[in-house]
Length: 337
Ligand code: FO1
Image: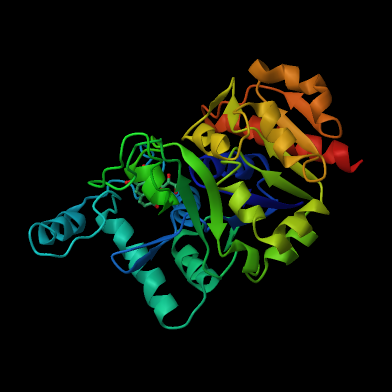
C-alpha cells in the first residue's frame, strides 16, 4: 500500500509512529511543511522536517516533542553572552540545543554549496533512517508570516507608544516569533505563507501524491501546517484528485496540542472538529475522523460529502495511535470502494 502524508510537526510525527506500527509494509512518503522554516544565526532551521525525522529516527526529546533528546544549550548560552552589551544580538527566544545545532549546520552547509533542501533532508535522513521517505513540500523559500492585530491605541512595537484612541500600526512577524516568542498571545489578524503561490513542489512530491492509494492528513495544524503545504497551488490541485482522509487536531473545541485555535481564529474558522472539516471542504476531504466528544459532526448537514467517523482520538500510547491510523486506512479503503 502506498500512503502519502502531509505533515506538520509534533502531532504528525506521533501519528506517523502509529501509522508505521499499524502498516509496517506500507510505502510511506511524508511531505513536510517548510512554512515554519526560519534562519537563525545564519542557519536554516526546518522545525517540522526535523521533528518528523528525529521522532521516527529515535532522537527526539519526548518531553518537548521537538528538538534533540538529552540536549544541552552551551552554544546558545555563549551566543547570548556575546549579545550582552556588544552591539550584536541574536534571537535568544528560540531554544536551539547543541546537538540540534549540528543538524542545522549540515543543512545550511549543503544549501550554501548549492544543494537543494530536499537533498539536504535526504542526507540528514541517511543518519536517522526514519523508515519513511521524508520530502520537504518545496525546495523554494517559503515562510509563514503572521499579521498581528493591533488594538486601538496600543503600540505593536515595543517602546513605540500610540496615541489614545488612535489605531496602532499592524506588524507582520515570522510565524516562529509569534508562536514561540509571543506564545500566540497577541491575536493574529491574518496568517499567510510568503512565497507559497510561486513555489514549485519539491522533486517527488507530485509523484508521491499521484501514486498514493490514500492521502492522510494527520492531526496537524490546519492553518500553519497542512494549510501551508496546500498553499503551494500544484500540491493542492494534486491532492484534490485523490482520496483524502484526515484526523481532527481539535477535540471538544480545543487543540490536542499547540495553539491551533489561535491560528484558526486568524482565518475566521471556529476551533471545532466540524468547522475544520468544513474549512477543508468536500472537494478536498473525503473522510474525517473526529473524537467521540465530537460525534455530532457525524451527521452534520454542513459536512455533506465528507464521511465522518467518531472514535477516541487522543494519541496516549503507540497502541491507541495505531488504532487511529488503522481507522484512517479502513475509512480510505471504504471510500475507494
Ligand atoms: N518551540 C517552542 O515552543 N520553543 C522553542 O524554543 C522551540 C525551539 C525549537 C528548536 C528546534 C526545533 O526544531 C523546534 C523548536 N520548537 C520550539 C518547536 C517549533 O518551533 C514549533 O512548535 C513548530 O514549528 C510548530 O509546528
